[in-house]
Structure formats: structure tokens, C-alpha cells
Length: 421
Ligand SMILES: *Cc1c(COP(=O)(O)O)cnc(C)c1O
Image 1 (cartoon, rainbow, N blue to C red):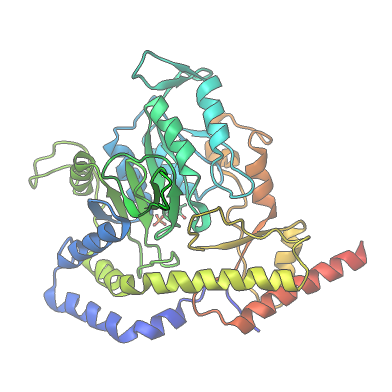
Image 2: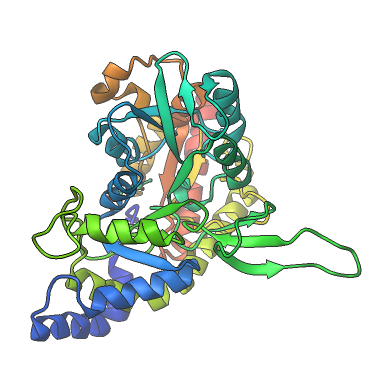
């Protein structure tokens, strides 16, 4: 049986006619840049994310880049993130002349460990006067922002991260590239008017703090989505979106998107070409109404994998994704953790099963970041995850039979392994 890691064809065949009509209408209008389709997509994403502004941009990477530019991150500044993420999270920091500062992950979720963040801010930094941002002691770098990543589609533990950020006067830019539609059950009193999804106040006479279920992307000062073709909501090329509740930031992103000029050929600030085009927006607008359904199918597939691993008695040898309580994982990826990962990957490849390693080299060990001076052993959990994790097919359109085949082949590998030990 041939099972690729991702197969976009079943999804396309379901909506082929609508997509073709949408493309045809853009072709007839001959308006290709920032038109009605971009506006419509922005309105839909803003409403879905429960924020007041969404600004369509050219990619998830440019969403992150424009966000940091809006925060005026530049040379001499530091931005905290995790080393276990896609390259662009840290790449955008470095491209602005700022310094990526890494905090290791929680091995259970692969997201930034809030405890380690707190320790770093409390013991690795000097705090200026009240109201000032922290300075990393060993480098003398002024820290400006934190980019938590909601890796694989599950939100980082944002409550303690937001607490730390607030105490240190740091802005948060959420890298929600993999997490559109993910929910986080926040017990923190989030700033008034900020992205509450539904408010679930269990009464029964007992006074309880409001528990708010918050959409990914709406918790930081800025949130970034990617519509790369294989993301849960994917275009037919590159596209992205910045979301925010901050009017000032929204205006700035809109200006940065068009080379920093509000009025054409008058440039207030230095921006770039970060525009989202009409064709992508039209395609994404056709796909958007299906997003919730596709997400539910992914979640069902994940639950089926969980069951199959259980039934085939594999839970001792295969670590399944951990679902954090009260939150909604959207399963951009279903990632297992195993020893002998590379051998398993090779075995599955020979059986026709596509897998991928997200990500084999943590960012602190990338050649281009050598100048930061990090070494092997600096972030042991990220390093361990990089050598033990494996993403298996989870896309909507995957059949139960295909899933059974995947798990039975992992079982076959595991049996072969124990018999040779
Ligand atoms: C995909 C991705 C990005 C970048 O998005 P592009 O649209 O490919 O530029 C950034 N961060 C993470 C975590 C991603 O998965």
C-alpha cells in the first residue's frame, strides 16, 4: 500500500469546481493584488480567530518578519523562541539584525517550556528599572519579544508564558503557522476585549474565575498564520496572515506590507513587498468554510491512531502525542517518539509509507547560527526530540484501512527489533 505523508488530491477533488470558478473570476476581473478576495479572507480569518484585525501577507515567514518589524525589533535586540521549530521562526529574528535567544522545550508537548522561560528571565537576565525590559546578562542584549510556537497544531502553555511576558514587559508574537483553529483553555484573566472564543462559566452557585477558550493567534500582541500548501488551510502557493487586536499594530502591518508607504510613493517607514495576492486569497476563501470539518477529520484520525497503537500493544515502545487538558489540538502533524527512529523511517519507506522528521537539526545547531555560540548539549530536550520524533500521515482523506496498515507496519518493525535484541 502506498501512503504518502500528505496527499492533497482527495481534498482538491472535493472542491475542484468551486476552486476553478474562483480562479476564473479573478482572471475575469484582472485584479491580482490586494482586492476583494484578500479583504474577504481577512474578514473571515479575523472573525474565526476572534480578533479585530487580520492582514493578509505573502507567507507565514513574512507574517513573522512584518510582526517583528512592527515591534521595531532590530540590531542589538534579542527575541526569545524555541530551537525546536521550523527555521523561519528564528530566521526572521536574525534577518533583522536581532539575536535569537533559545529556550528549551517541554519534552511532552515539544513546545517552549514556560518554567525554563521564567528561570531564564529571572536568573539569566538583569532587570532594569520598573517598566523596563530585561537584559541578558551574558550578552548585554536587550530582550524585546517572545515567539512561542504552537508546534504540530497544539498551543504552547500560554498562561505562564503570558505571565512571564507581562512581568518582563515583553511582547508576544505567536507563531501559529501550524495551529489555525487550535484552542487554548486560558485560566488567566486575559486583557479585556482580547480574543475570548467562548466563555464557559460553570455556575452551580459556585463563583469561578472565567475560563476562556482562546483561539491560537489571538493571545499575543500579534499572531502569525501560514497558508503554505500543506498547512491545514493551504493555498496553491505561498500565503500568510497576521492577526491582532492592537489597532496601532494592525495599521503598521498594513503599511509595512506595501513598502512602508500609506500613500503611494510616500514612505513613512521601511517596509517590504509582503502582499497577499488575489488568486491565493480566492482559493483560500473557497477552502476556508471546510477548515473546521477538515480539522475534525484530522482529530478523528488522531484518535484512531491512538486506539490502534493501544490495541496493538505499542504504547510501551511508541510515545503518542500528548493532548494537554482542555485545549484543542488541530493535528497539523501526528508525531510519535520512538527509539531507532531512522531505522523505523527506512522500514516504513520500504513499505510505501511516507513519514517526515520535523525537525532533524534543532536551530541552535544550524550552521548559519554558529556565530551565536551554542553547542550540542545546550538544549537537551530539543536535541532528543530531533533524534526521536517522526510524523506519520494524518491528512484528511486518509482511510481507516491506511491507518491500520501504518500501525501494523510499526508493529512489525517493533517485533523485528525485539527479536533481534
Ligand atoms: C510553515 C511555518 C512557518 C513559515 O510559513 P511559510 O508560509 O512557509 O513561510 C513558520 N513557522 C512554522 C512553525 C511553520 O510551520
